[in-house]
Amino acid sequence: MTNYTVPTHRDINFNEYKGIFEKYKNNNDIREITFQNELVKPFIRGIRNDLDVESCDTKLTTTRHDYLQYCGTYISNGKEKAATPDLVITKKWNWFNRKYSLDYRAVVEVKSPFGKESIYSKGYINYSSDLKCELKRHLSAKINSKVILTDSLKWEFYKRSGGGNELIPIRTIELYNLIDARGHWKWDSVDSFNSLKYYLKDFLGS
Image (cartoon, rainbow, N blue to C red; front, top):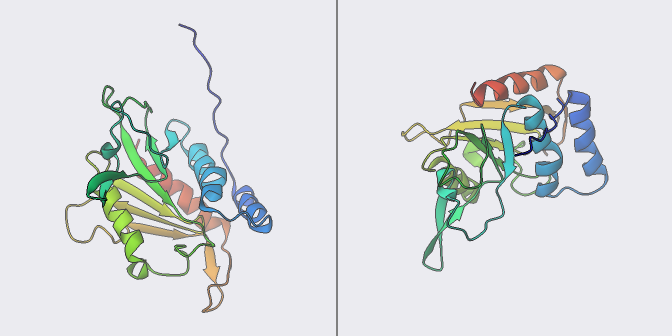
């Protein structure tokens, strides 16, 4: 069997992070999928080259993959269906997770900072009922117990505890400062960005 070399992912600094964000803001491409694939995913990969960060928001009908290992369910037309997050983070990814045991580190739910479910301008207690349901479903997974919620400006970290306070983030890190009551903001210093990198690396385990 041929051995192939997989390139490592480069660490993203704060100027680059802001540059990617501003690029798509200025290009008017403020879709959730844009921030997911162009900013959040490569940012996490750069911090933890030893982990796999994979998109899982598109579901396929298969008997070889068990979505419920890392997500919960919802009812549609009387049928229970998997409510997949946007990204799943594992030590060594394998689509055939019924056959191979995976070391799940977290899942990520991404929101556009310019969408109605952006989180930067509100506290977690004021999140929509739909968003709270998403978080509850992710935290009810059979194996994975950690959830990251971000809109690229605010990052929140959740962990299943078995108690009634699971929808209270265990850590919140903000890369911005609000400058008025209407949600306008400016970038914070590099210190908050470095705090995010250090905490995210630790949150995902050794």
